[in-house]
Image 1 (cartoon, rainbow, N blue to C red):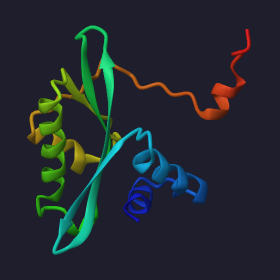
Image 2: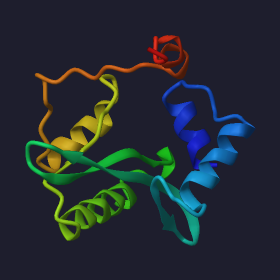
Image 3: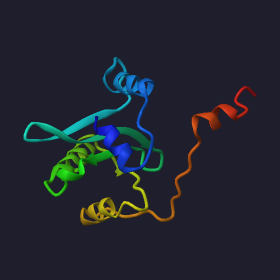
Length: 143
């Protein structure tokens, strides 16, 4: 599974069976929460992208959010990643999105260089924050 390869690349835990079931349900069930696209080389799936839309209150337009884009290392420099990225950008344009956003790990120089070559800018003034599911459940939400 390509998501396993991304987890290995980013030194993260692979999705467990429950997560795999949710991925299938949330991407391909009756109420999809994301869209997924595959890149193929010689009939073999070698990369994928996952996107979904958010909304910018300041632009009053949707934002296309690129959650994941990954190509197996042995297939990089064969334009599979570029094809995936440009497909997502094309969808952003077709859907009248005001922007396209994503994050990248600070150590992933290959990805950073790829994005810079495409004209993307690093937004240094924005800092990503996160609450895990456990932290959300610890909040006093019943008040």
